[in-house]
Amino acid sequence: MKHATHLPETPPAMRLRSSPGSKPSPPRTHRLPSLCRDGWTIAAPKNFSYAPTIVMKRNFLLLAALLAALSAVAQPAPKTGLLGQYFKGVNHAGAPALKRVDAQVNFDWGGAPADGLPEDQFSVRWSGTVQSPATGRFTFYTESDDGVRLWVDGRLLIDNWTDHGPTEDKSVEFAMQDGQRYDIVLEFYENGGGAVAKLLWSGPSTLKQPIPSFRLTPKELAPPGELDVAKLPPDTRGVVGHYFKGREFAGKPLLRVDKQIDFNWDMGGPGLRGGDADDFCVRWTGQITAEKSGLHAFLAETDDGVRLWVNGQKLVDQWVDQGATEHKGELTLEAGKRYDLVMEYYENTGFASAKLSWSVANAEKKCVPAAALTPKSITDKGQKR
Image (cartoon, rainbow, N blue to C red; front, side, top):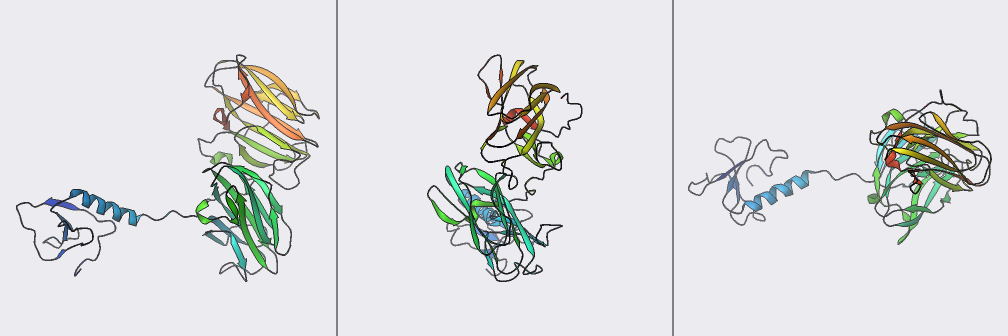
């Protein structure tokens, strides 16, 4: 073409005119032979204004296809991979020195991971979502030098936060649903010497391999256990779980939103921190909305102790070591109204489980669904113990 070689990225105006009886100005006419064999032309207007004039002769659908193609080309491709936040020092302290999207976590650094970062004494937090390619049980692997921790869907699957040479760690099997996305956080630190960080998986019809980029979507997530309830999206469902070491609700808890209170940890624990299989406690807080009006039975099944309040009334109080045991309390609720809910639980040793169910008008009991729960921070002031 002698003049403009492409249409503007965002043209200010497109004037369409049909000229069955008039002759468009032939000079400065540009033909698109691959798309416009039916006589389409793009011609500069006589007054040389910025907006091109598209002279229509035939086939209006072809113009629509051309514009759609140009629009598609202009759309940026969605990013894939994980958000990497790189810190100076080994504790992820302060503001990150670098943020970038890494297509995969598959690094064997021979020096510093990026300009402005040291060769040693740095740490990284990768975060985002991982999409399952199939329904079934998956195993996650890390190869690291030095320390590494991996959470998937809020569950700590790998915890080797030590100085070590290149080491492979393997998770327990993790159940995933085809097409579903799960939050994923991988933390790593390099102290000295070699620096390796790799994330792999295997599962149904999936050989052991680095997790491919197209299965990952970058997303900034708070470090596991840190949560600002006030900043949760208004449509968030579930309850706030406050997880403490020990059985006295002492110290600073780790926080997360649990969609339901329906846990069977077996001989393990919540997986928010290493070594939490025994001697921990949880306080779940939020609001519950009744589906129907009437007398509701609340059933708390736990191993070990449990206490339950609804609307400030203590319905269950079994703060003792016990095997999996169900305890019942009743309260009349009004449909559509929200009531404060607090459930406390502790695990001493051995098996660990906690479940909250309900029924109304002697109907079959069911686990309280996420749709009936709204997360809310509730202090224990005013609770009648």
